Image (cartoon, rainbow, N blue to C red; front, top):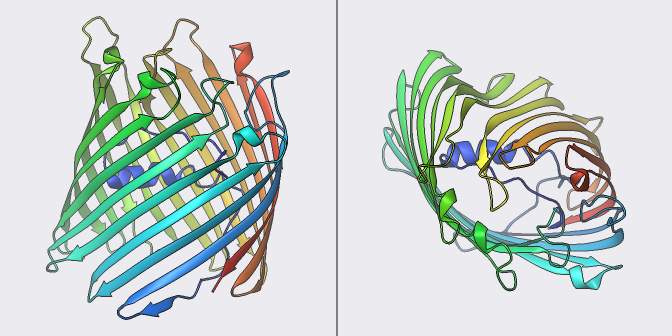
Length: 398
């Protein structure tokens, strides 16, 4: 993925919900890695290297209003290594990836992102299982940066766990989740220092089986945001959700949750918002070679020195279709609306359209061609923009 591509960071409640919210934005990238890479056996371990090379033309990589928009050809080199092991039902994974972007019209914006993740799935008995995750990311964003003079630069560290109780085929199961993230900005001077924060999240989810492939769920979550300098933003988000989840073996799979989300600021003078929250990630597969995916979310996102919080609503629809054994297409549309709690009562509406084509010449070699158009309309003039990105990429696997 091009590291200059913006990513909205949702309010974390637990690992499962974070995965859902990230999945809701996965349809934005242009490229798709086709084929299953082979691995190298190293004793009991498997090592999987991949490499992506791409060339893109971005006519507004800062997502800025005219006349501040800048264009450039961008070359991306993105290698990755994954080390995995399995011991009966226990799975272990360590993955490192970097994304190096070269901006041919603006070499001051050249940057390299680093991503390191470690995961483990442990099954002690049929009733007790534990998922562990730890990660480190160092990222630089050119799009929608806080300052035109310097890109947003930050690093994050997170560690989390999800404990599952109950036989998965039984009528009831319970999941308990905990997650902690440290976010630190690496800009010069005091730029973005107000966004430095620590986040601690806890949640509990109870599942009840309604049918062989359908379960009802009840979830309670809490996220505590602790800012290092912007103390007026210290707050606790609480959510109370109910919904259903459909097993992946069904033609329709995924989950839907709806309920209440509230933010409670430590500052007694601050306004405490609340809204009806929902999260959806549903996939329908009418054929084995064709799938339609719906993602949607409404919730409360974190603010900054300019606003206390942001109310966000988004919905996305994606269609993936394999026309034969080596050619596939991807079509997607995403709409988001964001209301900012600031003096300007800023309101943004953003539409994103994406077309992708993938040719898999060999199991180890595929070609991607893509186009993405992104437009934002805002009641704050300097926040309006249009952006087009054209991309061609090669995926190389063993």
